[in-house]
Length: 250
Image (tube, rainbow, N blue to C red; front, side, top):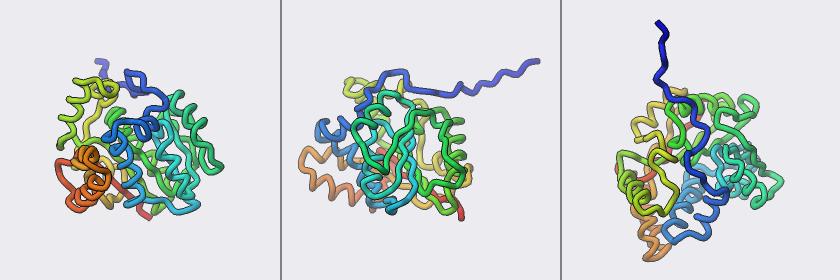
């Protein structure tokens, strides 16, 4: 008898169209909560996982190029990879630096030599692809990373307050629909830990951020920054976004 696999086919993009400038526009022109939310990614990079000048860096799922540009400003040699032609075109036009380039490709098509990368950043990508693709991505990134190199990633926490926020966003239409159209795989800290360790990574930090601070930004940016620092120290189990930092064993 022929056996039929129940595993879903590889996902090659969201079912809703996302404008190529989305992340940059949200970071610079959005409502204050949206600006702070997107700025939190830059903050955790600078605080917990900044590259060194000259590091060879990948930004996988680079979108409109905001994080890749921040990393390049720090002196890293950065390649952003994204499956959206609109996003890659926008990033190339908007962020022109000698130490920064953008490539069009799926996460399965990362084309760099083995053990050539010092650091990889993968911010809010893995919820957009299926479970088996995430595992394959973690294995691929380990292969191209130098011994001792670092993977930094974020993803929504579905055992926290995030599902309520996603429900509200989808109900109001403030962003392109998330559930099922953008987000197809749900993570929590235990599941992410298991997948990273299973792919051979050594986990160094697993925490949450962007819980209350972004919403307090309407009362003042400085207040929100103080709350962000407090959230970092507490590592709230119900935090909205998971931050994982893992290292390839030397």
